[in-house]
Image (tube, rainbow, N blue to C red; front, side):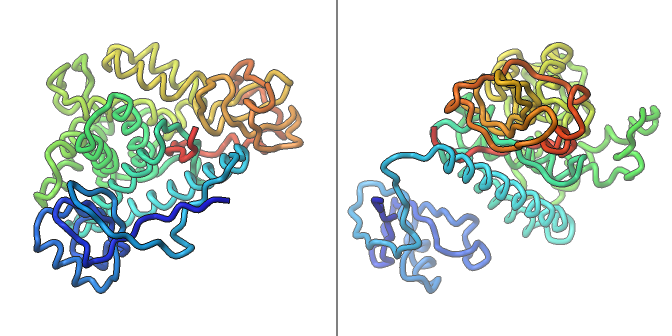
Amino acid sequence: MAKVPQKKLLLSELQLGMTVKLPLSWTNHPFLFNRVEINSDAQIEMIRGLGVTYVFLLSASNTKQQTVETDTEDEIEIEPERDLKADTRKAIRLSQKRFLMNVNNCRDIYGKVVSDPEGAYRLSAALTEDLLSHLQEVDTPFLTLVGMDEKEASVTQHGVSVAVLAMMIGHALDLAPKELRDIALGSLFHDIGKLKVPEAIRCKHGALTPQETSFIQMHPNFGFDMLNRCGLFPKEALNIVLHHHEFVDGSGYPDGLTGHKIPITTQIVSLANDYEQQLSGQQITSPQIALGHLFKNHASKHAESLISVLVKILGIYPPGTIVKLSDGSIAKVIMTTKEVSQPQVWACKEDGSDASLRFLILEGVTIEQAIKVEELTEGAIRSLQVDKGISFYFSSLQT
């Protein structure tokens, strides 16, 4: 198995124009991110004073660099022949791990917004960079089904999932990294104002009274005020927090904005939130039905071009959809692929037995149709964990 060492750069070789990554936790250096674009001599001196012997070289502009090979743990393995099954299992585990880590980090950030706004912004900026790096990890990112034990998603879990969907849309539209960062940051905080809404209203399953509806529709204003107070968050992200329930037809709130008055980044998050909210609140348990509902009933609320991109990203059978396979098995879609009728699935027999991760593209098996939960046996419901919440994260599988 061949080894390709990452490049480490000696501190004596630091030059203006380089972009480097610091081998330190964000708590152990004064920079906003671990990734540093060197544009001043002062930055070089600050890095040299961190007590490290090297940094990772990411890019350089018109400079020559000397590098040293990494230790064994920094090496990247390149396999002569890919093992799709092993790679897919690894990618699914990694997506789940990253999702849970980011949800937990987001909870910590929420706890600091009032007591330590500078710390909250610093942590949220680091989390945004993590999301962006995970999106850009592969040339063509796909979606993986992830979730937590709770049937109904928390505000933070919903925020991370919306960020992933919205960033996927932005990536498909070739938005600039700055806009993708704004989308990520705004998505993470878009529902933070709900924490100021009484839980009895926020978590109510039945119909809300007019007074309760009016109260909960204030959550964008609550969130905007919480974040705007510290003066650290960019206006583009704040716009997302304030206007993520605005629709292009003017039917949204709090300001009833229309069309071009809503920035494209906010429109994208509004669409991702509109779709994901149906799943996180368990209004509709099938991602495919939720997509059809959005397409049929909310088409006028969003730009047609954005809905088309979302449909392309989610595919015919979005992750979490329960399907029947051509060999008679029942399955839950786990990861989207280029072949829309042959995604990676967790499958079992009709009675729930013989559950396993299956790779339809390797078996020549296809999806025949999506099916409703009511059509499943109790065994299949248990095996497919149908009652588990549905969220999304980027897949790290290189296709």
